[in-house]
Length: 303
Image (cartoon, rainbow, N blue to C red; front, side, top):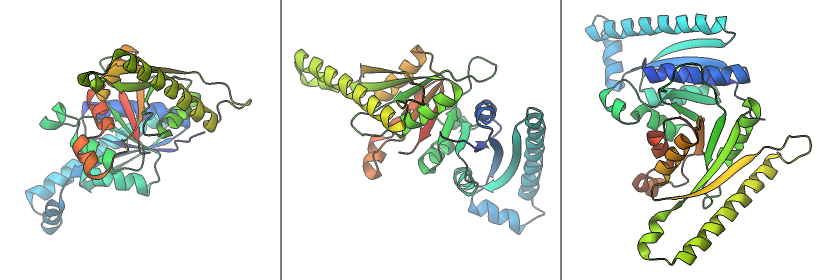
């Protein structure tokens, strides 16, 4: 069984950061985890140099005030969570946010990073926050990206979706989802997106139908192999039902986000794409696009 003993909650003071804390609490309560809340005052090397060089400057006073304010906020959160039985401590740091988040999570041997999809900047309100994407690309620790929900209230995860690419032979996302589902009593759905690009080339209908059958059969086979390897078919482990579906779309990331919305999915668990180097730069990451398109939280881990 997977353990989540230490959670890094990265906050920039935005509404989505506040929402991310609710998810951190959800996992902390179920895994008896410690939450470490961190806020990084954005400062590049030049700003850091100026800060330490002149303690009398306006910039120095601004940084000190920001650090004091956020330290007080984190202390207040610590009091609230301690009253709820959750171990919490806060840190205010200075530097480049993505590097500090990744490095801090590594040094603390954290099991999960939780943060908002978008930040408080103008561009970050329109697109997925650049800090979130950089953390996603650089972190070896799983990252949970959270969007502000339309509905208020406590977080509850009952339905987990795992996009499975039968061509890449990656199973870590489904293994992770199975561990979560067994711990929090959630259901799992697996979806494979068969791209419709092939219709542009005039492929006969019977060939398409044959490809659909082969894809569906391969999807079922992969799931059973992963379940068997994971141990869910052992007598001492209750059988976990996993619903599988193959769908046809042109854009896989949009298809997955739409599927999640239609099926009332609470959490998507996915791998980062297997592509590397220039191919990854040109073709982009499906995981990143899922985060951009989806309305629910997305947990991303490297294969």
